[in-house]
Length: 318
Image (tube, rainbow, N blue to C red):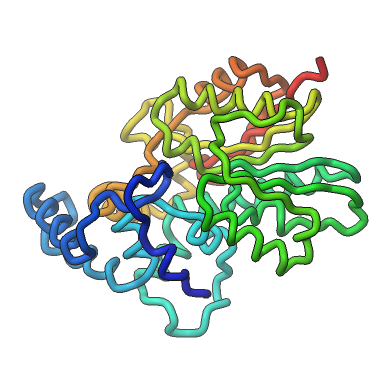
């Protein structure tokens, strides 16, 4: 696994990104001590004493992904790409700590995210035809588009839009790696601010709505996507569904979930990291938001655990 540049390890002040960015301007050690103090004040949990929680915190702080999550409480483009493209057995033996292996190979949310990435690529691949204009907003490293097979697909253009310049730099590097730089256009823009109307045939979007708790803002985001699409264009998006503990309407299929790993995930992401990706929505809520934005022919494709569904929606021809 490639190591992330130091410039991606933490963010500076006045960061407009909602997905990641260090919450404190204090040093790393101060941040670590503040989390320990918070855990000790909160006390024991069923199945996890304070000492066990602090031990898990210290294990997280020993590797790069763990430190990034502790500092930023979210994932950037680099780490999202690492999670979705990870292949079991591809890393040299002993290069990952036992906790890293559990994160990459066992956590239900990570497995759902990786499965969602595969579903995106399947859906996008079937939509390809010569002359299309494709976009990813926010694009991250843009793997869902840059890793597709464009053999025989002439004149397809690719546009990546993101507020994170590091993400745009990474997308350009990945495009060059796959011989697609000549098709690629990158723009540092806010996803909520519509560009030219009717610009794209296909728009892919993952990972922004899960950080936005304001439903009005999410509907505005979908409306921005609607405006950016040409008549008859297709949106491929995703959303996080609520766990059973938070909603009676939770669609989670717990028979597909390793419960020990789910408990670890909750302890790590909710208790220790206090992850920002906690804007959960049901299929019904997402359907209503997309319909209000103007989309039709909305269909859902679930991952096995029904944690991170994909949704495909159309802009009407007229």
